[in-house]
Length: 121
Image 1 (cartoon, one colour):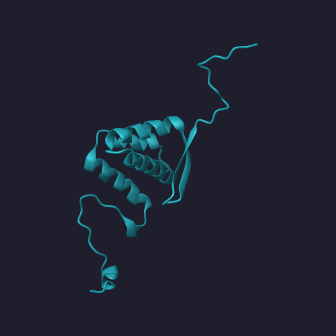
Image 2 (cartoon, helix red, strand yellow):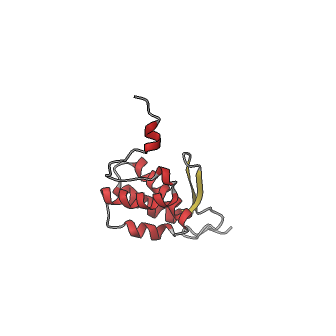
Image 3 (tube, helix red, strand yellow):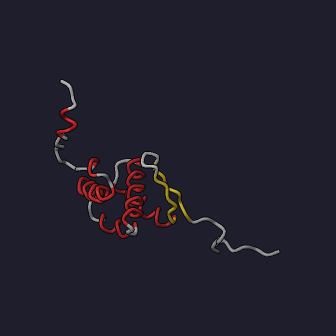
């Protein structure tokens, strides 16, 4: 009978995490170590776990859409917090969103005049 080594790598074990977003119908398999780094960063910066999870999924979605490694994007966020972090993430999200659904941070929205015409008073 052979004994197993506790610290040996289990090559049969899947080392990925599946992230998904039902709203955008986004789904991806992410390396677990990469997910842990990104998620722990957002847990430290965000006020609650749900916000951290949403930001984590958003970062991986941006990484996939822009063909940029997620950890490279994360490096650009380091050293920022609060509104600056939201503004940076909005900048990246706006690159992959429709022009009609752009995000802004601390900016008064200007109404769409075509949609405004259809509102009955």
